[in-house]
Image 1 (cartoon, rainbow, N blue to C red):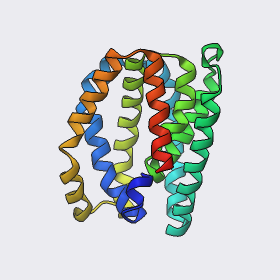
Image 2: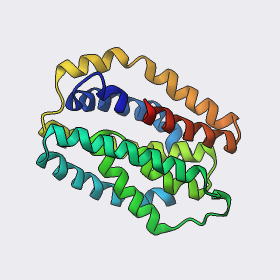
Image 3: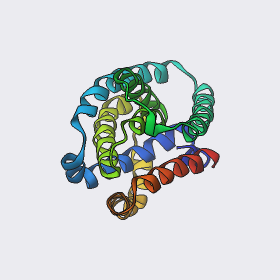
Image 4: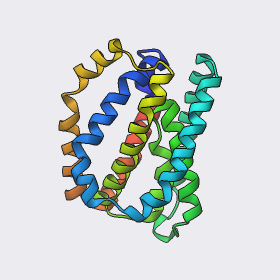
Length: 208
């Protein structure tokens, strides 16, 4: 989202990315369903729905300038989060259900207003110490629900239109290639290197 927002208005970036995110969800859905941790999903999905509702109310009440400022603040906070997590000994970390609920709600909120729901829920998922495939699949189902849940409120907020859809369609062929590359990596690399790549990807997105 920060990269896309540097080339388009915030509203245009949101509109272009949503169909791509849904396409990613659909391409990987069968594998997501087979490998997801449903215990985690039951914990985080309802708070995420509440977070999306708050995101809708927030989006309806603010100006584009405040929205841009908010995305900048979120990006900075996620950079700080990445620094903190990189210094924690997650092998000794215990999973806390309340943390899953809180981060599920925060993820729903930030995903609705800026398509950057990944960093908050990662705080909880890393503590769960699941395998790379379970991590990928659980978040895949989580964001499938969230992204489909955005369609009606985005349409109501007039964020979806054919001009942005045309740009999304041009980018669409890259989706299956990247999804299957992600599955390939998740199945074949060690958990240690997988989570190093996860941290690096967030750093790269934030710094750009």
